[in-house]
Length: 136
Image (cartoon, rainbow, N blue to C red; front, side, top):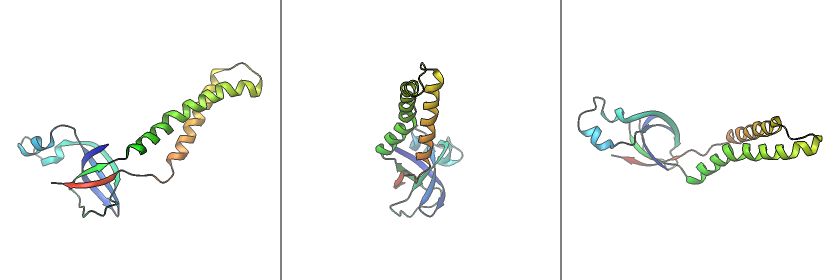
């Protein structure tokens, strides 16, 4: 996934980027209909990225940020897949362990446990999107 944005803060190799909107940035920035320059296209979403290429960045630079598709897929699997998997396993496993008929709370307990596991894995060292290039 490629996102364009404006650098709002820099801390060593971590860069905070304000995402630009999807509309045509060149036209809206150069026509003069925007009183604050290109910053009028900022969507308000600020996200962390990493300057692993050691580009000479400064606040206000317009950059292109790339997130690896595999990171997005793994995050989606953690957030959606684990709760569903644990919910189904607990719906199937609890009745066999305690000898009762399946109850909705059993699946809910598994879903909550799945979210807890996903939260635990999300706290580990994160792989941030990378600043790919400086745009003019």
